[in-house]
Image 1: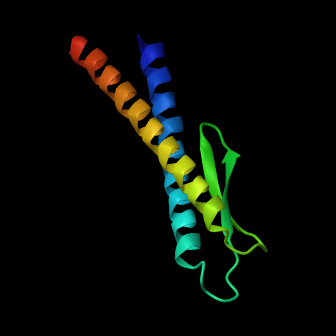
Image 2 (image 1 turned 180 degrees about the vertical axis):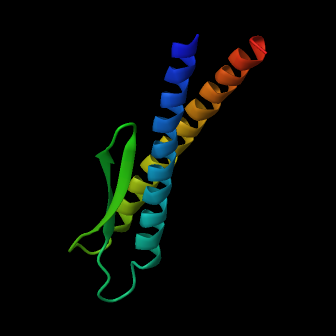
Length: 104
């Protein structure tokens, strides 16, 4: 059972880093949309870099103007991904708590 709890802990760490990254992606996209009409503003993008365990989000500037259609698609993808990761996180946490309560 120790291996299973360790695996769940690792999964929670990966999902936690995903939640942070998707949060950064949503904030970056919101910033782009908010500044779309600002003269001289260039869109930023969020890149995910693999780490062990999980991933890290990096915000990079682009030389491109803000395209609202692209930003809305990016926002939808990031928000949907965040929701999916949050559900998985909650499910694993519930399962881990149930396992711990079984042995308590």
